[in-house]
Image 1 (cartoon, rainbow, N blue to C red):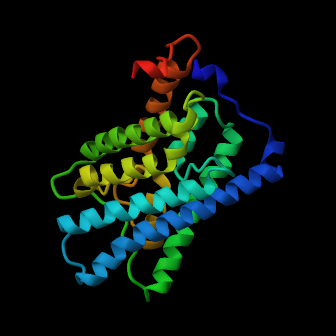
Image 2: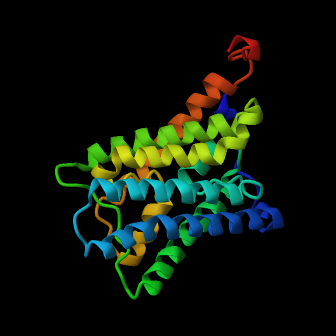
Length: 252
């Protein structure tokens, strides 16, 4: 059971060089991801004079986030695991793949990376607004919460299947692009309703810089619930000893 492998860690871990390097890697990866993702939305607003979102704009946001996350995960994978998402870190913690203390380091670094990216965007664009995530007309906070739970479940399940599963084999090579693809696809599905965050840190940076906190709790609770559920499901059903036997390659 994954719950039996959960570890708190020791205070000394926070000062270990490898932990600090991993946190720095998460900071840089998040900065790269948010700068490109949030920046694509700001560019769209610039080109359309803050016009309403169009299908083309949604596709552009999906592609920008998918590409940027593919790169952000890739450059951090060998140092920190390339989480680039507090919900992914929480899922890894639930499965016993990372201690609580290192998770906290990651969460701080991820949130700081998002804030710095948004500050850089605000400065480099001459003061354009870094729009916070918001609910569309007719979408309640509970609707958005379900969206965030389901979308983040898919994301963290993909992380487990391609990156954390000890039986992943060669499929681990495609983990960054698979993770980018599921985020891009989920943006196409949920972007028109609640912005499709799936990532508390991505929501946190624009909220801090624009100081807009309406329904912000949705973008924390939803991803953490979805990520935690995905971690428990994958660990219990597919990773726990004697839970299943992998088919020989000749059978599929």
